Image 1 (spheres, rainbow, N blue to C red):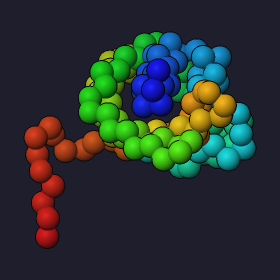
Image 2 (cartoon, helix red, strand yellow):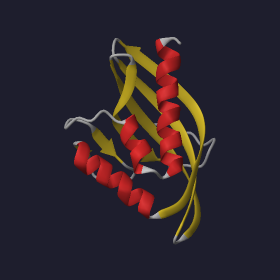
Image 3 (cartoon, one colour):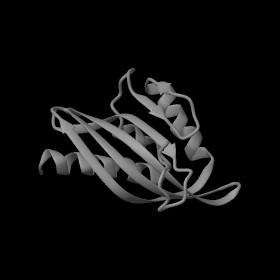
Length: 137
């Protein structure tokens, strides 16, 4: 498997862990390090293993079901670091009913040995309808 294929598979593993709502699966995706960073849409920056994993537990406890349709995935690789820019189309069902959202996400992975681990996840909600172009001034 090429490095490109391996990091794309690591990204898929992240989304499978996300959809499973299983913290143990999510823990296997992330590098266990105090320097990891996670920024969920609308949240402040979380740094370090404890705060990042606690955030996933909180998210998983608040929903019954999550499913992703992944759109464009751009991969930029340099040595042992890979940056993936991902279009997430998320459907979630929780205590407040079902909700669909679109999020643009940057996922950063680092290769340790032969494995790729997530070191940063940053999601930004898309507020404009599909097909609309931002107005330049």
